Image 1: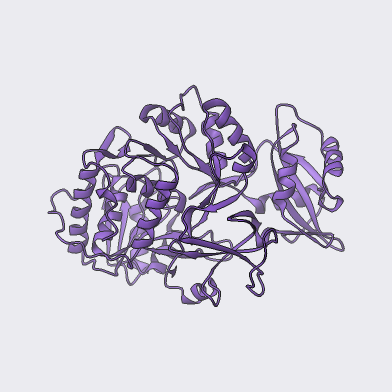
Image 2 (image 1 turned 90 degrees about the vertical axis):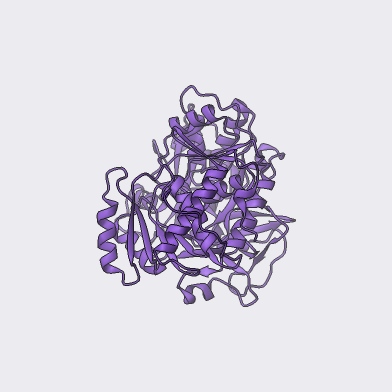
Amino acid sequence: MAFDLLEAGNIERVALHHGERSFTRGELGVASRRAASFLHELGVRRGDTIAVWLPDGAVWMQLFFGAAQLGALMVPVSTRFRQQEALHVVKTANARVLFVPERFLDFDYAGAAREIEAACEALQQVVEVARFDSLEWNAYEPYPRWEGRDTDLLCTFMTSGTTGQPKLAAHTAGGIARHARNVGRYNDMRADDVMLCALPLYGVLGFVQAIAALAAGAACVLLPVFKADAAAAAIERHRVTHFFGSDAMLDMVLNAGDYSLASWRRGAFPEYAGLGRSVIAKAWDAWGVRLTALYGMSECFAMTAMRDPQGDAEQRGLPGGMPISSDIAFRIADPASDAPLPDRQQGELQLRGYNVMAGYLNNPVASAAAFTADGWFRTGDLAYADGASFRYVGRIRDSLRLRGYLVDPAEIEMFLAQHPGVEAAQVVGVHVEGEGDVAVAFIRESKTPASEEALLAWCKQGIAGFKVPRRIVSVPAFPQKDGPNGVKVLRNELREMASQSLGLAQTTSA
């Protein structure tokens, strides 16, 4: 049995901190077996599906390990979702049981769940959980047998849904356990370490860091609602050693109140807000932490690839990295033919290994389309190989065609961010009739701002003329929203703003 993650380390060690409550590995293990008994009483058997619409907490983990013991599939549902969004997930999953909190924030999850139950023929039971920050079902005897297998589907993660309804990327128990151990080893997680879990467990980055910590024998500090001051206070209080999140999230914590982050040893981020260089510098200057970029997605796990923390600041901030395990392979291929491309030539990043999903749950058409004829997963990401590493360039669909040249917006963003007057930059394309794509840049100014004219002149001296933005617009903040893996910039809203800056009534997104 490979899925024995709670067996790592002394059972008396703390597994979870949640507010004022703490639970040992032994307590979580026994409670998870009790959850398996409760699920079994509800009729859940190997191969069945449960949906968990709960905030992060001990019960979430209890149900996850309970499902693993029975060989059942757990489908997490974002607590940010409302009724129709949750209905799509529960219906797609063919869930047999749905777990919801009696109350959380200002939304009636239980009431929404009853409406979902009426609309889903497969859904047989809604379970309302009174205390998601505690351990439930204490009256049940621990389930006596381990019935799950490594090949069983165990957990799903939502895709972004940018090309239609979100899909559920399904991963096996064996793949999850293997990746958890590999992530722990790569990030030097030890039994005395503490992981700050400030991202939700229903997102792939939040999930992977928590499970990796448990696999390494470390403790998790759960924060069901992210607030920068609360996260910084938790780092200080629990002497957190590991903390991963988006660049914007790390930036907020680094700029929080007067808290000591001196215990923080390892961290990494996916760059969504153009703050990579900034957070790398702040973390090193203030606390001696060598932050790095990371790469991952719902279909192939977070932290599939990472940069070497011993590299210099510029190298550590490059998107992409080296696969964290020799059992994960990548290639760069022509998006049209899937023919492999040589080093330094841009193409689609394709992956193969234990980390790749088994498929999109109950969606065989999308699953088949996601893989090449010879079994490689199509990421849809533009990248190029650099020896044993790869450099992530951007989403293929986000590339701009400027005066006939294919340009990655990140290239212009990175150049702008080098100017002392720019803290962060985002570049989008607007289609102008008779001209094609036009680049518009949005910047957050530094403490020494520069005018648009000065920045445009600087661009004209430093990059090819066809890459120079038509406009460089200063904004106090980029439009953004909290996603399952951190704060993401809303590029569609930026495109609308770009259209307005050019005086255009209607545009086609590029």
